[in-house]
Length: 408
Image 1 (cartoon, rainbow, N blue to C red):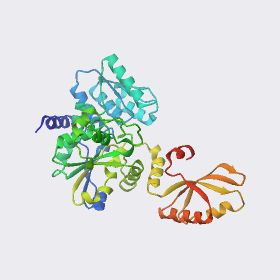
Image 2: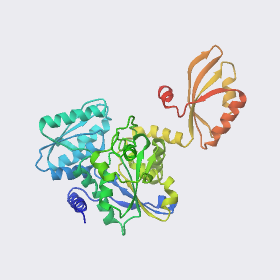
Image 3: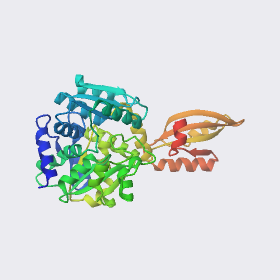
Image 4: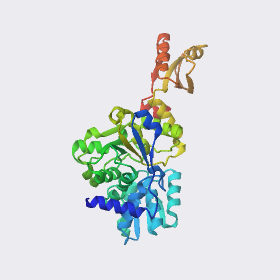
């Protein structure tokens, strides 16, 4: 047994004084669908509804002589650090962007109580991070990285330790998301070659893929932060050192809109609340269906800190990805009966969810923003075909992100 494996086991054992192992559950619905044993490692059921408290626990346990811990986070890492500051009786100062949703700030304060102070600084995370590191240096505190720290990596590896204990035999495959790489580096280092891994990154934050292609961590020029638990512009140096031999074929990319459909399915069918990053391991099962047939597979559901105010957006994005909702701008003639003519083309399952005159583009025409949802993607083919035959002029803007930001 390697030193890393021994240390990860020791960390897992020490955690039992603070919180129980998270459940590993065989999911009948997913197992039947894919003809495999699909297990869910429910990190969304930890005391802070994510795995992040593991790394915070291990780092603080190993830095017991420190009296001040500092971190920068807009979400799960902040809550994990807050929880452990309270547990260890240590002072924590947690920097969060000014734009952090109030719910996340309140939960961080709730977990930390009197042990922590939350400072809201910076509109963007880079500004928040710089402020936190400057403060840490000035006060002589210990900075707790969310992922690029050997003690944090070791703590996250406790997920692997628990899986090994909880299963009758090792799974054939483990699927888990990658953000900064702390969890994936820890689990891969613990299991080594004893288990096959599939890693998943969000399409708008594929920092591991960029690093593997270039041979070193790269800063992504653009980042989509929708999958806020895994959207990281640059994978950690220490985590990449443990992941640099990952085969690109074992790294999948999950589109953000598709993840939304998985969130809804897990909520509606299984009653499981997952945040976007927490749903990523389940999201890729469809594209792996042939590969995993007959296998035992563990999907790590890494977090369940989902703000239900986001639910309308999640539903909208899921419908768009499935081809069940479209937005288009229609050039509508300004004459009696023109609108009625258009409405006659709608099928029985077509529902108008948005109708707004944008402007009168000419004396005899007006531009109308229309949103329609339906129950079968093919219904739009029939609708557009009839509109084409009737001579209507329209532009489908469903996937035009720039234009959609202004008019939808």
